[in-house]
Length: 67
Image (cartoon, rainbow, N blue to C red):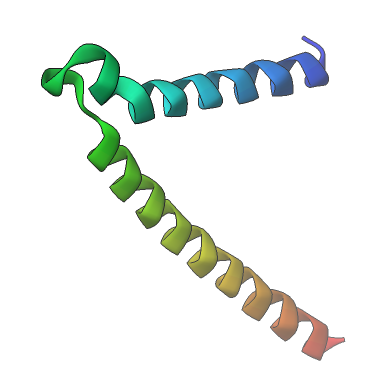
């Protein structure tokens, strides 16, 4: 499959899941309310992303010191 089509399909799927989870409480009642869980997951994901970027920068800095 073309890499651009794969990227587009992946972005559509990710956005659809986030959209469904964010608006699930208003459309499907209290049973399907994922808004709080989605927000907590995204906040945790941001923390891990920043942590991994920090580790990556440290590794790259150490690698540059060797040269």
